[in-house]
Image (cartoon, rainbow, N blue to C red; front, side, top):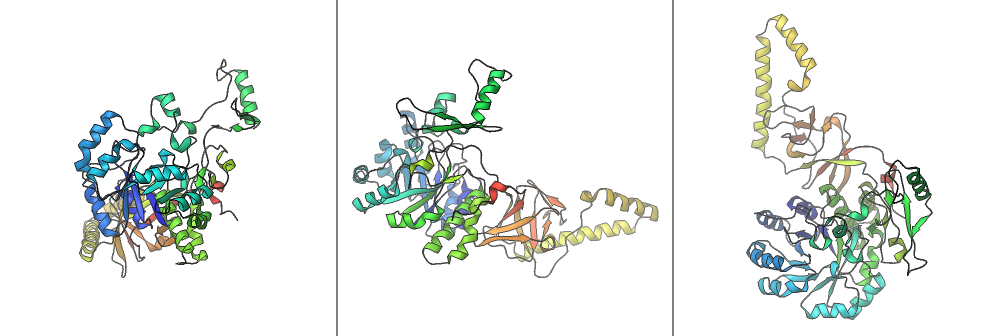
Length: 493
């Protein structure tokens, strides 16, 4: 089975491939249901081409899954020469109107039906096959039993299923709440996730200081309130108010990591991870977990080898996990609010190691800095030396030491994202390294422009990391933040 990961920008695309995705899906500006993702524009196709060359055999899918107005069709046609710059293997679409346009201009690209089309039966799959689609991304309301029946009925159609990430309260994402409340249509890529906003439960005639509001809040916090639609007696949606939220319509997150064998048995061809708006760290950790789980399923590694990577799913920020509609809709109907916080923050991305000459230049800067300071210090009279020593003690960040060469150590470019200092608990994670703590004597953070050894480093600081450790391509550094009980969950038995 193919592992398909989300890439909201070119950096995330690199981590999709590096951490084990067989394919990644992107959006292009103005034509994606995730317009708040960075998406792809300008000359980024050059970087995408380079990544495809770096990771041969990996596929690139492009989401053109909005509902098109006439003006957007016109703009799509105008932008086709730009789209052709990208090495696109497949287009993900829901609007049938753009199918002949894509078939004419991209004869070698496959057509994949978006989950937004809510395709959930064999006759619909047959119809889409007749239109030229080679893959259907199943509506998320389809059960595994129904998916297996569809595959049996239309074996030559590829089936793609979501296995991880946020789920929508609406039918395959076709929600009008965002458009109704603030004029931002989900079908045009502007969903503001109104189902996950924080609401207060109160009486309509009361204000926030009214005792009636307190009464309403007390009732809501009791957990005894439910929503029931008039014509659906017995179908309850719980309403619960917590300290800073009211949960009414927000769904659980999907997690099918323990059920990949069932997908394989059902004939599913591609497993899809949701999250083009998620962070690099999230994309890397989730992709890696599913890669290891699939490798264990295929007998490439043991279950024991895969287990620590899979447990990382519970250390990233997420809402309570569920199995969606695949087995039983009751789990999907439970509403939640908030999310468990990760115990780790992404601190830095690690680049490819510097070559010998680049390292020598930085080391030379460190030596020259130390020699210059020594010469200046030696020229001072005793009283001035004492004053200088006091300044160094009082202002250590202004008198950083120069780096000195250490045998067997290498330098890697480091892109800092959060503050790191000598007190930080840092771990290295990589495609095949679950986690490895970095001890304080195993690395130094260096300013490559001056050769100085940082006491601390954060976003915006030019930096390389000097270490004896091998840091594979795609390595990340993370920093322990706090002990969060909700982030320590383990896999279900």
